[in-house]
Length: 286
Image 1 (tube, one colour):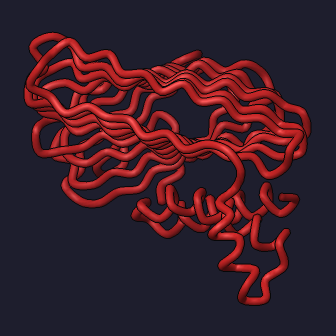
Image 2 (spheres, helix red, strand yellow):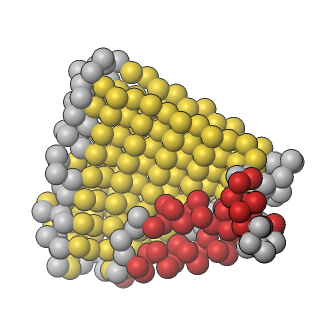
Image 3 (cartoon, one colour):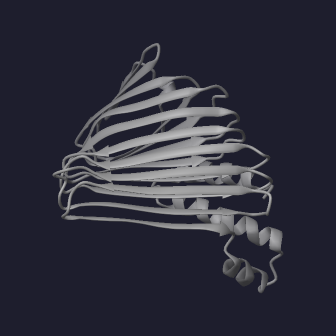
């Protein structure tokens, strides 16, 4: 894994980065699998360009404790996965994506929100030119904190595929609100836009709210959303408890299982292990 913070204004095989006052230019040109990491604690604009990408994973850790504005823009070929870990307190984030992907590739954003504090997250992802765009967002809230998450996934061209998967868990008087908006614009025929939301509370004093929306302006498309919210999965708890596992441990296992589902699709082991450790640390008090 290449740490971008260690190669400022340098060019390494298949990659170059330039840091300015409030922007970072990332240029990828790799025909092999690559893994990059960057830590961010201030406002930043990321300009991404790429050619001949085989399979790139870009891992971003946001550790700031003040408001942060993140903008991602550019054009990507091949498979490009952007993994974001929110791992500190009192963060307000406005996060924008505007990426084009060619017809042989996929752009995917995975957000693991473990921040301990009030948090606002907004994602905009637009799919162009036969692209496949995925947004996966998992968040946990507790201790009377409030989290607002607004995700927008839009088909901008015909024959594009968009998938959104939102997951949230609230305990210890926490409150999490997720709004997922899928849209297929006019003339975007043969496109797909699907959304799935799973949210639950671990106690009677916590709250979750989910608002799935679809805006469809074309006939020849596939669009759907599935929404499940309420108490934690009682069947899963019963199954675990029936095998001698204590209820509090079983609850933790169910929560970890949902988060780890998002992590499992990540290819590079270094990123997986770092995320697993962060998830274990935050959920140990569940």
